[in-house]
Image (cartoon, rainbow, N blue to C red; front, side):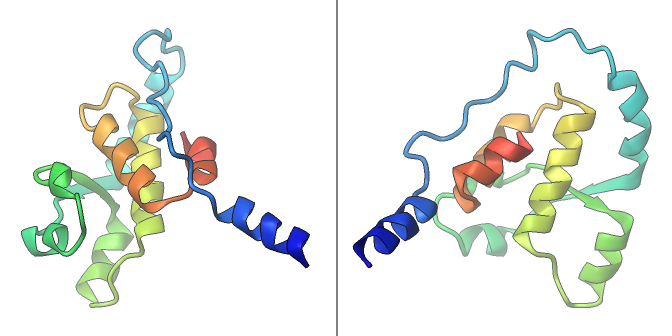
Length: 124
């Protein structure tokens, strides 16, 4: 029984050190030109001040463009909203398409705030 409790604790541990930004700048981008066309699938919006205020330590996301797919905008208009995981997936797409995107550090910080480090290691 005690061993099972230890396993559960291990699974839920969040890394005390947030994932570091991968060395995008030092890599020679050989495939970026093939992915740029996927940027057309996204539109950008920002979190509302009310949304940002509803979370602790999210001021860094003020003015940061949030990537949304066109179908996400339709779902949002319908009143159902979007899950944080879906927003993080869109951020991951943008980081993969354009590693030099200006807001990559904010995206990494956002994902680190909401997700377990193992998920982030897989995404980033």
